[in-house]
Amino acid sequence: MNTEIIKEKLEQALTLDVCIVKGENGTFQVIAVSDMFIDMSRVKKQQSIYAHLSEEIATNAIHALTIKALTPDEWQKQKHFI
Image 1 (cartoon, rainbow, N blue to C red):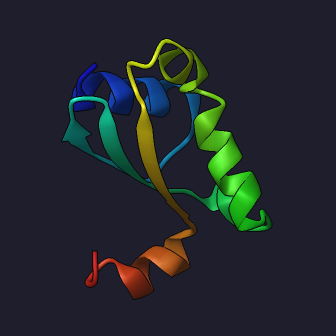
Image 2 (image 1 turned 90 degrees about the horizontal axis):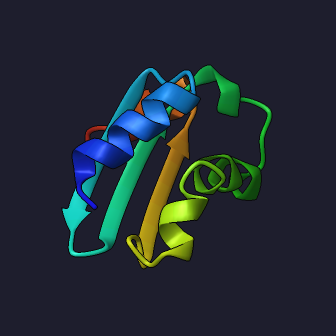
C-alpha cells in the first residue's frame, strides 16, 4: 500500500478540496479538507474517511492511520502548523 493509492481512493469517493497522504509501511497520515465536514463531529469526520479505507485496514495493508478531517475554515487556521 502506498500513499498515491490511498489518496486516489479517497479523492474518488469523497469531494475533497485538499487531500494529503503521508507515510509508509502500513502507517499513514491523512489530511482531508472539505465542506462536507462542516456539521460533523470529529468522530463522524474520521468515520467518513475510515469507511473508504476499511478493506485496506481489514487486510492490514494499513495498520495505523492518523486522520485530520477539516473544514476549509479549520484548514486555513491550521495549515501553517501542519
